[in-house]
Length: 396
Ligand SMILES: Cc1ncc(COP(=O)(O)O)c(C=O)c1O
Image (tube, rainbow, N blue to C red; front, side, top):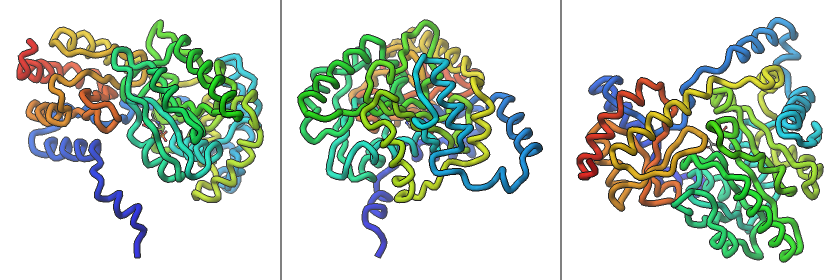
């Protein structure tokens, strides 16, 4: 008999992929130039040339057996050292290689963090709007997920709600800034207040209340936006990073978990990660791409395109009467739906060949997500469709 947990998951509709597949079917019918697909968070800019150069150098300099051999479970020493140096240089931290665990992207970093910091039956608290995959990630670790309703006026944190949500059974708080789906970036004031609350709650509980900071969009922050390195403001922080968006390498599955050296049990947390890997079949991050990210150092893809897209959309959507919080980073925005039912709104958007995602799947009904990680010409070409949709609602 097959495992019911997973066969039941087949019945749950994956809303984003349903929209994406609908977009593909429309592309076949009316041509790609007439469909405006803002459903998926796939990077739209190429990886920087340093990636191809690093791959070529690795292929030419290292014997194949050494190049493609197993990585140590913790990650290759040069990759761990490069990550620690990068974080120290950029954010003034004090990581050593022993605080870094290389992973298959942020998803795998989160899988390790959740299992290291919480035991089955415990609870993780996060804030809406939040990445839809947090549900299966926590459920797969035997944890429950409590979601604090969104602070919709700015998409920072509803502190009264968060304080109320944290209880005896809470192991960790999970945050994501820059945020998917809102594009909000937690300010220094927000993170300081969060740290204060977590310290107070840790004292009350008599144990550390860990902070898991999910940061795949850390390098996509727009001009003049206050974006603190979260671990610098709260000691018991485990940071989950991915090169999927910053280097445009989502298919290569490469990222890391970084445990703040000041975190309680820091080295033990890293030490148990390979044991967690054994239980989830992780067996080390890809050797070649660990070497690539060690070599590419500070390089990123041409991320400024996302800010350009954001500016174009914000200007136009404001003119068309949409209401939204201007994003500070990532490549998403999350306007208010002109009708309470965001599913109905997104279906109506399809009539204009606009593929948008209802906020309900991010635990924030009444909003919709635009993933503007598409070429700038596509954003520009889509504006008349956003205008026509606004006209349907009498907004212009
Ligand atoms: C908020 C958030 N966390 C984690 C992930 C997973 O990242 P990765 O694909 O690098 O594992 C994503 C991917 O889109 C994301 O948006």
